[in-house]
Length: 157
Image (cartoon, rainbow, N blue to C red):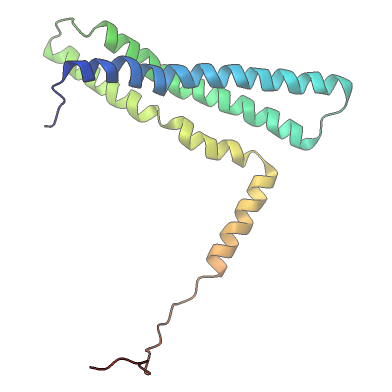
């Protein structure tokens, strides 16, 4: 088993990288800017009717905010719990349960990356462009043939 032995690096990874950069900052940034985007779109809607593109932008922003909160929230809670109970003496059963929860939280935290694809699939324009691209890729599959070069240009053996 490969583990880190440097305590300073372990603390940096636990408190700053895992907790701040991977969970807390994305939740805060997406929540703030998503809220501001939706609020701005709503103020535009007061003066004029919203176009379909604007409505799609609002729904995509809301979907992305919810996805980040749903997927990163449990991981943030787990990392906070893990940081708080680092120096607590734990029996074998508790460590096994915590390892199971840690594995689930780590796997579950990849959800925002997958949900971005589904967020864009809410957009009809994106779905149409995706279908055009898939048809181009599938329709243009041809067998590659390599033709031997029978004429040697200026080389002697």
